[in-house]
Length: 169
Image 1 (cartoon, one colour):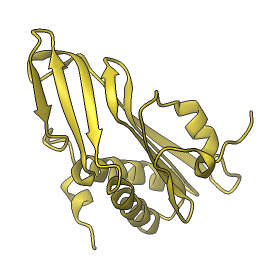
Image 2 (cartoon, rainbow, N blue to C red; image 1 turned 60 degrees about the vertical axis):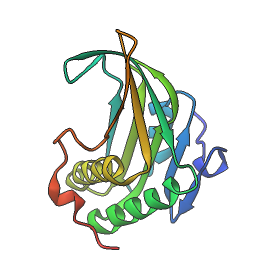
Image 3 (tube, rainbow, N blue to C red; image 1 turned 120 degrees about the vertical axis):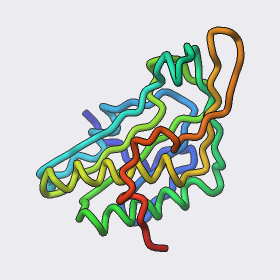
Image 4 (cartoon, rainbow, N blue to C red; image 1 turned 180 degrees about the vertical axis):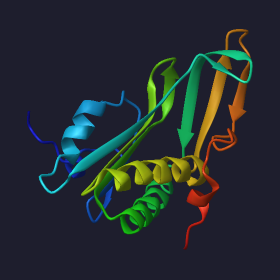
């Protein structure tokens, strides 16, 4: 399998060190992204996939639409990735977030990290997704089976570890 460098890919790619962030309007390909993080120095890899589910807060969901501030999101994402790299001694990390229309079961966000040891990868993956959901200028609109729609806060689910949101500017 050919190694693909995210830096050579179009669509809001910004690199700082080796960390990568993309906003895309096409399906996320986790196996390709995993392959891009392969490194013989890494002893561990961990990833997270956020999927579009068919319900939220008692309502049946048929679709989501993500909007993002493409000029600002990469800068904030790079800050989050640099924080994680420093805090967890990462070898590499990447975040890909969908924008546009998504259907149930689509992958909305993907995070992947590599490090020398597994503990750092688990903790870093959680840190990154918690901060992406809390800090990135990306908004989600849900469409329900009854035809109604609602804009949803991405960080209101109560599943974020508060310790992960204590960052330094």
